[in-house]
Amino acid sequence: MDRTLKALSLLLTYPTRELQAAMPEIGGVLASDTRLTAAMRRDLRPLVEDLRDRDIYDLEETFVLLFDRSRTLSLNLFEHVHGESRDRGGAMVSLVETYRAAGFDPNTSELPDHLPVLLEFLSTQPFGEVQDTLADAAHIFQALNARLVRRESPYGAVFATLLQLSGANADAEAVAELLDQPEVDPNDLEALDAVWEETEVTFGPDPNAGCPQVRDMLAQMDTPVNPAPHAAE
Image (cartoon, rainbow, N blue to C red; front, side):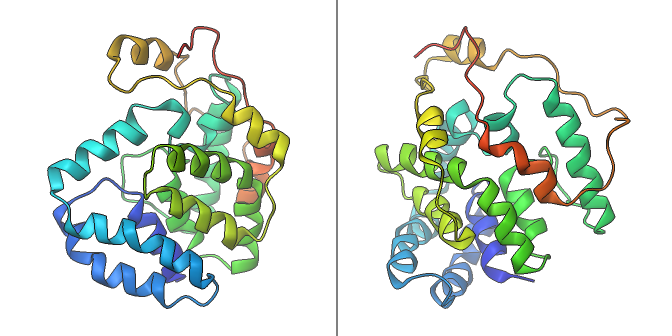
């Protein structure tokens, strides 16, 4: 198992006391990975320390405001690719089939494209394939990092790390298109409800769904989707 990918997956999970207790080990894994530059290992340290030392209720609130109440910071990757399109359902089915073909059965209620779930899966795969998959999502990682840096959030370092591990240069035009999507105040519940109204994503049989590699399913990540017309700042 690639312990760094597993550690990054854990950094992006909902904070718990168990996660806090594991932070010294998680920090040690990240600090010892020579694939990461010294600067990147240093940039990850504030998040590790934050998750280790801050009050758990503050951590939970921060996580929800960032990732659960902001569509532009969603940890569900296909949200940034397919948005409300029905193609999202087919992509989900394909991803589930790939997990099953590899014998990976995530013990979670999260959607299969949830980034921590994908990273856990990638931690079991050859690094060459991992890099291909991460490279397909490079522009998403860069956009998420930019939004988080703008908010002065230490979580941004996780996405910068994934970008570095991918070995890819994010497409500037694709990044700009993602960053052009309006953000909604996470405390404006009415606006949030409007933004999150969308067609139900289904996971029924897909005649085109086989067992392709993860990269095949993420290959369209270089085509960011525009926000729904009703999304407002």
